[in-house]
Length: 281
Figure: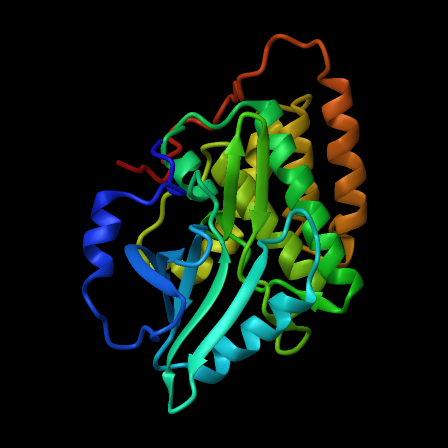
């Protein structure tokens, strides 16, 4: 995978094109990196230092971007994306940019897409351990994430694994709270296992139940598989019985220690006959 942190000739060409909604400031706007919800994300270059960062712009949701900047600035954890600065034009607030660290290896979704049979057990546990530490940090501060998924888990490096959680901009309201974040981690784990159940759009509301049922079916065929046992604790239907973030930190840490010296590292799952999983290409 290409190193996104490099400023390329294409970025230089794009930076010469003035785009409405990007402020005139100490940053040049390069390649488009993606979009999520209310904002678009670009590669940006800090002209004073040459530092390459990620810049999130949102001409149509200024208050939301300001809020995200304020919250991100208050967070300090090795597994949460780093805040750099926020800038908006004084006479045109719609021209704004939230500058954050740029994670050179993209997102966990990219890794999931490229491993249809699942990531290795060790890599899966390392990712879960680091993400659970970030979630534990948020929960201790009366925050929840609210949108945990592979696209919001960014990869600084894959060897060694070093990941961060992005989009940490919510407090506890209109949400079941901590247990919903744990459920979302369970769905994320299913993806890392290559086991997202296939569904059609009209069945979308039934997808949570479909995932929980699939986890139980995997358990019947893989009763001694440590990743499957972890999955069951994350996708426990009774939210009061779900594993907590601190417990998840401990369990994944212990499982990683147990894997020391074990050569067999493939996910190696038995799946129910006729199972269709989500495919990427």
